[in-house]
Image 1 (cartoon, helix red, strand yellow):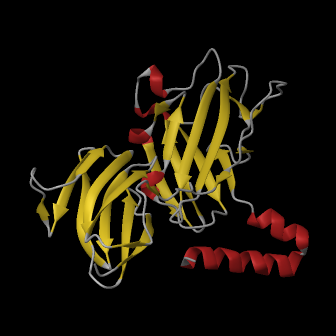
Image 2 (cartoon, one colour):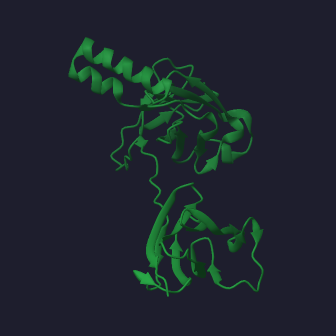
Image 3 (cartoon, helix red, strand yellow):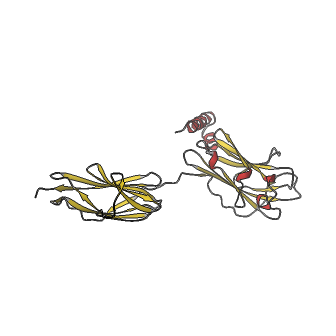
Length: 287
């Protein structure tokens, strides 16, 4: 748990002790809201439909309060009608949140302005250090008869997504050994046939015998490249490796140690650094 998370949860506990159960729930919920300076009362909750006057403001402010962790300022994204507003957004970190200041009149292009004859969508996303995402949507329109911003009286159905989105869950690679593996053998070499699959993308595959790495397959430009002892395997080396970053098929001979139980394993790692290991045992008998 980061220092920011600990700090926030301590505040939430104090609020609970001071105000009871209702106070804790209200304080612990991350909030995204829209503020239109210089109108002091112009603060609207997430997913609001807001009617704006034609003039009297040069910026909009998106506030994130009660975040569960420290916000990565580089992850903050603001779009207007799908158009990235990055060049016109300033991000100010706050305790357990941040403020994104959107400069509307920094460009003369109509792509970076609120529509005068329809509805505009202002969207916001941010990610904290733990990978939790925060997002907001605001539906903006301009009314020349309005002197200050106010919530729209609309019956339109709005899709209210969750403000907080948990970090994505990435699965480890899948390893399936296809070759028939005897419990005992008198052969010093066996053919290891396996398939390694990962939807996110494979990074490398390692074959080990009795705890020692004997061969490594590294994905380079979506192509598997074999290494032994840190050197690229020659074309005449027995065995075959084929596939791409999504799936690799191995048909590789492995040498076993005599007069003992051997453990042959495959380790696989994907682009997220998630690893998995599968092994098989075989006892090599004397002839």
